[in-house]
Image 1 (cartoon, rainbow, N blue to C red):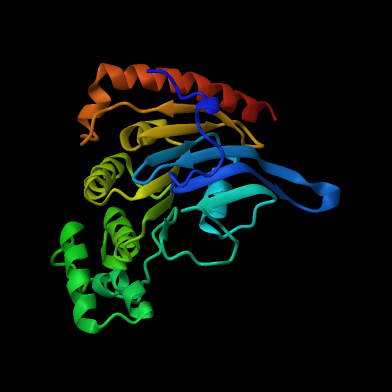
Image 2 (image 1 turned 135 degrees about the horizontal axis):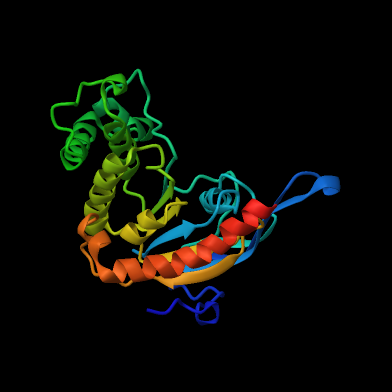
Length: 276
């Protein structure tokens, strides 16, 4: 159960990778008061791979995600998606983004929230309604088509947010702590829901989290970042068989052993953050 040595992961484009980050760096502030957030981070994801970015608060996880999405320019290095360089401000139709909190529109019903992107894209009404109906069924929201977000639970609203992204059929799904605000029981339900969706569609996923249990439940790999400025400390393979049961997995001996290994390394970075 060894982690993957950095030297074994190619850092030049071979056409085999969906996402590549090459010596990626980001600095905030002015020349007189620069704050390094991310320092020479390199990683790659193959098509259909589910990778979690894990690390202490302030280590640059969300910054990396926003640079991959093209929402934030990078200071140094390069990001490539399907072999092409990512340019900040340029919308990539193959990329979907799910934010920390649900971003549903309170004035739109469940159905109209999920179908929003298709409306903007100009998809014909009949096709749009058919696709929305499929998404509602997959999300176990049947009967709530005409409900407004105010009447829904937190987990239901997050499902609406997720389906609004997935209905656009992205190749790549970027998720920034989407379940962080949920209670433990609801979070486990969302883990199982996301796993079932991903098993069918197999998008390439980067999932930002500070929750080690969440990362182990969902991911194929866990990239552990150091305390700020974020650097890749270790890249762990998560060898648990799929499909996974989000609850039973945590009862296994293998889960406990890998949790302990990663927790030790993560704890060292928590100590660095606390000492600053």
